[in-house]
Image (tube, rainbow, N blue to C red; front, side, top):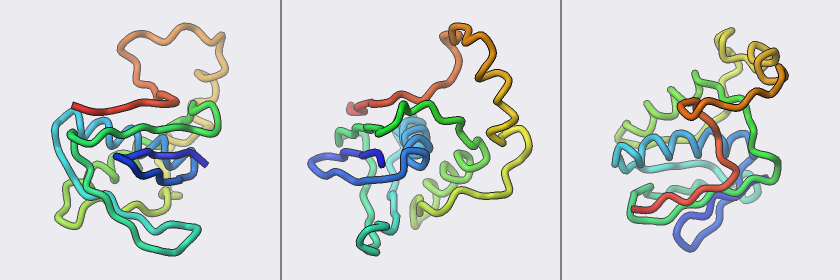
Length: 132
């Protein structure tokens, strides 16, 4: 389980979910687009929501190495959700992943010679702080 530290609070998420959240939150904050992020806490069953804004420090810490193959379809859905009046309501990762987003579709490129990543290539950091 990873941790999203937001302001003075810590919220726990599965590392894979957290990697997707980090990507979506990073994209939206770079665009200076604030939004509501809502989810149901797995341990308590309580529905939680936070207002995600550039003025509040946020940090992502992963239990594992943080190198997750992202589901671009899910990232797109989450970004779309963040623009709705009710905000981004975190749910399960879609199981009907398009073929190009399936983890096995990237297996060859991930295991091949581990060439250095070009500076323009997207990546997921294991820990980041976003604040303006």
